[in-house]
Image (cartoon, rainbow, N blue to C red; front, side, top):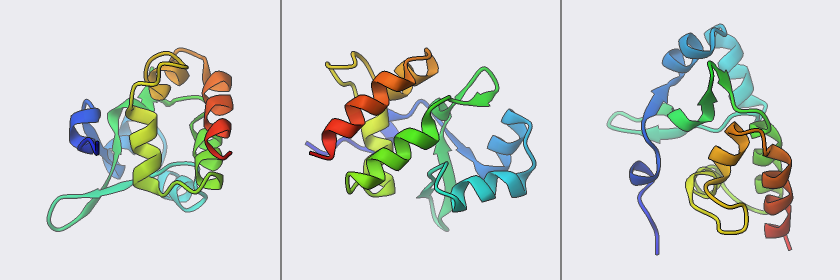
Length: 118
């Protein structure tokens, strides 16, 4: 079953909105995207780059996000699949990986993502 990304995310942030929220200059946010430390999903017409609101916790990007994205890409996930995995309940974590990372359990999430590569 392929669940719509909009039903998984509580909301979406444009890159300028994200930059304001985490108090980082917009060019730095764009650099994070280029370096693969942040993933964006093009939404709307014309397409605009967005990130799920869940990627921000207490005014910062969630700890472990860049590492989890690297592991997921190494496992063959594209950007949309990586976002879907991060926002989908996983009984072995338990809960959504993105929520576990926000709660400080980023190591457990990365270990779980590494299993996906095999």
